[in-house]
Image (cartoon, rainbow, N blue to C red; front, side, top):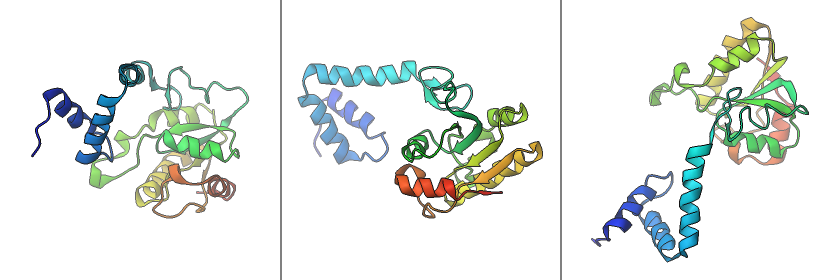
Length: 199
């Protein structure tokens, strides 16, 4: 087995921690970084440090942002009374690409999954309840992924929101079961939003 110099071995080990990056991919990336001009490698390192130093969660919706509240929550042209609940921040871009939704978001940062030890306490639900109980919403659209975990999460959130009297809807099944909302095309997202139903 090849031995790499300690700095290269360390870089490979760090790159292997990234999702979807195995040993071979980590080696290719590490050698690419090594061959890159000094300024490119420095820019990459600066970008990683900057993202860790400057980004935080929006105090209203839990979106990843560098300003608080985020650009969606602070935009007066968006319908602040319609809240779309998604599992991850990456789901927002898929919905925005449809150009069919002009409300605001709430990001849970996950879905219920007892197998993986994710219960309601691990999800960011409490500030959604505060928003609804303060009368800040007319409708909450549950746009969790159409997976077993996403469906369970939608049912749980609907159950805890119902007593508040807010209208709770679920996006239609325009998305494939077992799919991920992040990879859906614009038309599928548009149809899912148009065909949502009350829970």
